[in-house]
Image 1: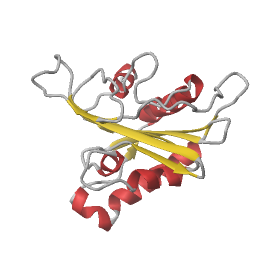
Image 2: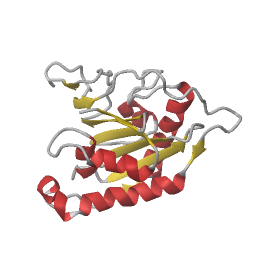
Image 3: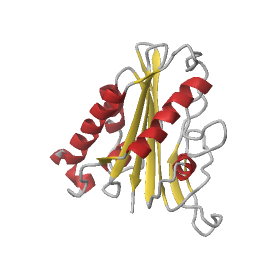
Image 4: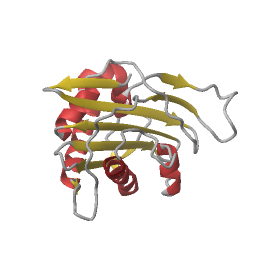
Length: 212
């Protein structure tokens, strides 16, 4: 389920999706979960389970312009990788992972896609898995030449990377959500893009994949 939380008057918003199959065009669904039946899908499209957010007015008006308004933070992306793998290895999460969630490998290609999406959300003033050109996460990976069997994406706006990860993991167990993406034993690779917007908020994109 998509989350919207108000802390100290600031909306902290996160949303995630998971896909299995090959390249797909994923349409946004506002604040609802959607599952397409494979029999009804167009050729080459996957079964999908998606959670997404309604449009939030009032996102920061700043842009990543030539003035250097945005600050990529690769050190925070690496720190978040450690948090992800700690969550996957935690014995408390064994009922969900069955102990099969091995440490995720860092994929620089996924990281480049994730970073570009975080930057684009700030520059174009939106918060969604689907970018203004209509590309879904699956299409962004396809255009980057990344082959995958299944993939998922989490996005967040938060004060810090640890708080974003904690918000993901604070979701209900055994449901299709960000927590499930993080703990999914099928995923073996991840790339993370963390960018500080001019207002100081962090835009986080986590792109997961099960790569052949």
